[in-house]
Image (cartoon, one colour):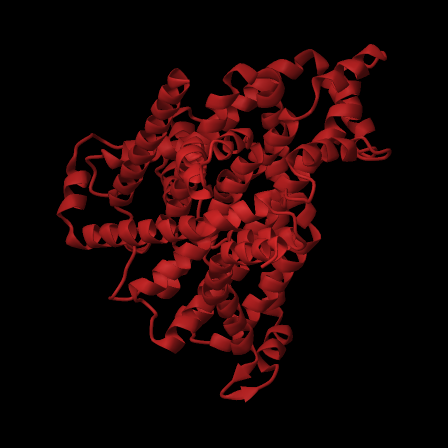
Length: 572
């Protein structure tokens, strides 16, 4: 057998497990959504689509969803860009700590963060109590259960998705280019507008694409914090399934949402997908070269220069004030959740009248919550382990292979993280009902392995792009076989990346609500479903207890990781 044929077979063996998982738990369910949308009462046709386009209410829902996604994206860009600029240029000494704090909300449950905004913005919440105590208002303002509350919650949840790619792009900008601009007589505002801003646009485009695509399929926050009648598309889909049993209409709405998201994903794939045939170094240089093309950002440059000159005397203080405000905005829900968990009140109120352990005791004495928590723990761990097992060889094939279609394979593997989960959940519901597995632990296992896979692929491909292969070559030159090299060299050096990939994959399943809404049954109910029911029916501090336990576990994981890295540095 020729070497090229052996290499091809080895590549197929590395890619095949992921492709099988995606075929069963992702592509087939999406196909079921399309199939259901084209069948009504056993007849093939476009009746569901005709009903959608024939009713003005659906057009209103589409326009409301698009306008909400656009506005949230613009707000995140306006808030996130100066914040990322501050971290990358003025707060480099504290950049690691700040970015870790930015990531903390991203790693905690969307449901818990949305729940916290009820306590902050509610009639008896922190904001209204503060304003009334200052004498600025006489009656509480309506800051939640309307569009304002929905926007606040969505921006807080999606803002890290804007900041992370912006900061990554800004950090790679060569300071020599800025010094060159200044040496030619450009002021600080002019250098920013003509050099820094164009070079940072790829990060802004990537962040905007991620935020917009995520906002299109948002369900939890608008449903919890928004006005009851102002449905977005994801809410309309869920209502058609759970309340009206109009499966074909729900499927048709899902197909339209999927088509829009997929079209945008393909259009913006070069902004979102950081994988190319030339490797990481070329990718970074290419991003810089793209930013320096004539006309790139030219429309923004004059405006940015004039704005910068006008704000120059107060620019630095404003940047720091903005940065502090953003950190408070991002971390406030987590602080509120911790305080509420220790409340002595019998219902949700902030600030609490007193403090006690009553809700921790109530949580650990409630068998329904414990059963749901145990189910979420083991099923999410099993799914994360599966995603790591199949995603590792897949990531190695993409990072170290040189074959056609790598970008499309990368995009396919990470698309379950980007495309609306309401559509994926509906497809899994149709699929597992058909085969009699809906609500069975196996259905959750497959679903969460699919949603956890993108994190494994993204983290490991990135880690392998930075990995020094000379150490592997040295081990191989001493006679070590491929598996021995992997076990003794690659695995220890990438241990932190493997642990991080597992954590993210685990959290993607543990925090899931949308897919769980379609799959849950008496045979399987997740902790997120239990929290959702509690928030919708009772709003007790038990949900805050879950948030505190999750935050404590994250802090232990982070501290353990830092300790392991410290020991590794001392060992070397």
